[in-house]
View (spheres, rainbow, N blue to C red):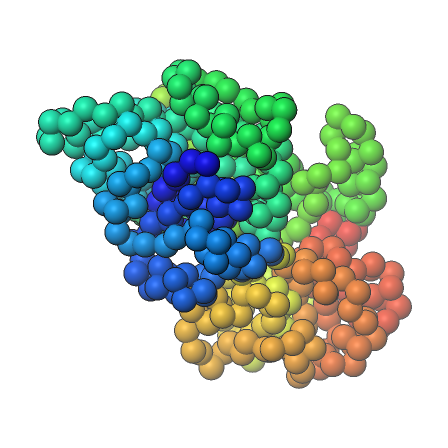
Length: 443
Ligand code: NAD
């Protein structure tokens, strides 16, 4: 059993803390957001993540998981301290380290015993040095000298699968040159990694870069497929056939080659940008990353272009949107393609009727009350009186929707399938004017 303190109770911090408590550790989660901590102490989980709620409640009941805003108290017995706070993009796209360094300052001001500080936030190469320096400066000001190792341990969990990913990670990357820190983390992660086969130990800078490289590679796969989809549209080919044709090659594989309305979320857009900025700071123009971003920016407008091509003018139209979250199984709308589409529709004078199984509350928070946005409580209610349906998030419950019922509910039977979840032939047979991504229709 280890005493663990985690700074940040967002997607990463809350899930990591809960999973570490689940395997028997004593975990205290610290946040500066009093309302979040009060909610958690009353049993309210601030995010939607499959399996998380029950696990939080069970570990709170077992007295292994605690929530507080009192950093000093939370640090008083901590052996391992995680930093899992946000690193949003700065004005120029580089990662804003304000929160990470604020936590480092807090640690330096409070700690009076040896500890391992583990950074899980996604941070540019060189951040561990900055964190170490900030902690040491504060310790020196108090004339105390505990041994503090600063380790990079980037997080690879996927929102929507976060608990599963945390309990059974593909790999655990540890960046440090301290044998003691490696040993401590080997023990901590033992229950998730019985034979240590998933532990990849490296120097701290390589660990920091590994996280950006992973996200940039995944974003590249998506933008690459979207580029091929755009070619397919023009040459009259079907990207779904092409996808299967290339995915069957094991060197390529099927994962992450789905064309669509662009990637979003709190990670890919900001991490691709931040890596580009890091490269530039070091005198290198990352041309592939530039293109990945540019293709994605345009891709978020593809569904709007299709709709405009169909109707010419969208003024006064009502458009149904299925999906608001940036991907299924989450309520997260950060950088979601739905936001670009909704704002594009408003800019063209259209109204939106949207449904999402989990993100409606978040959409209400993001957009506030507006006459041109109705958040519906079920998928078919969003279709009522609408001129078209845009599918923007591929929630499982949309895949098997009755196409004839969609036609019957819409005022004009137009479907823009931003995730290619429907079969174009079946959609057309049901009387729908169907537009998918890269499905042989030239726009
Ligand atoms: P989040 O925005 O959901 O949560 C961050 C939390 O940190 C917030 O609750 C905020 O109040 C808190 N916080 C800010 N400053 C603090 C401080 N000084 N002390 C204590 N708490 C503080 O963020 P997230 O999505 O969990 O991401 C955290 C980091 O992990 C980011 O760097 C992100 O890039 C990275 N990451 C995220 C994911 C993901 O899927 N969300 C996956 C891998 C890595």
